[in-house]
Length: 225
View 1 (spheres, one colour):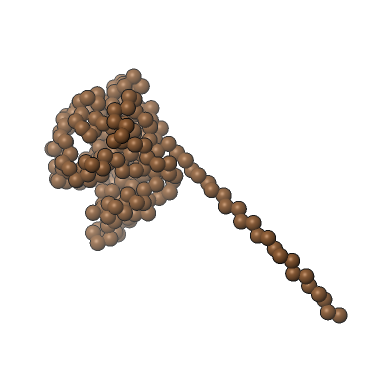
View 2: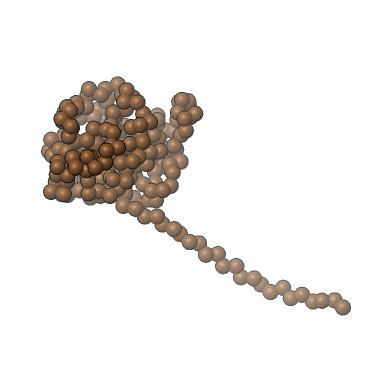
């Protein structure tokens, strides 16, 4: 006896779940000094690795280094800022760190320089610190100088900065607590943090970023052509 099979239409429902890992990419400083020049980073998941990051084997091969444009396009937790300053000489300054050591930006000519603007109350800034410690451990001071600058405010006094560093003894780069008025533009115009300026060995601003940087991001920017 032949069995008759009924073929009923099968409705397939595809449910797409978007898991949005939203973190605050940057904290708003007070007061707003230049709202049109420095906008907050777009909301992007901080846990996604940078596609343009390179390993040890590619670091030695300049032909495989990403372009700066590729690094920016791959960004997930930060955005470029102060674009009009890219390629221009980085304004010089002299500051004394919380340990009493004087630093002049132009004295670091011939090596990369990373200026990190942060505050003790800024969550993303605090999340970035372990990444900065790893970068310092992984990169020779002969090739990279790192200066962490924290602007004085009622919520971020010099004493607060010193206490924070004392409690976080792994911090292995110079830390500064200064008034924003002590700094020339564009540094004095920083309005969202964390914010970083990457200055090349020729003393020109290569890139400025706003938002949380991971170690892979920092390395990619430094390696980019």
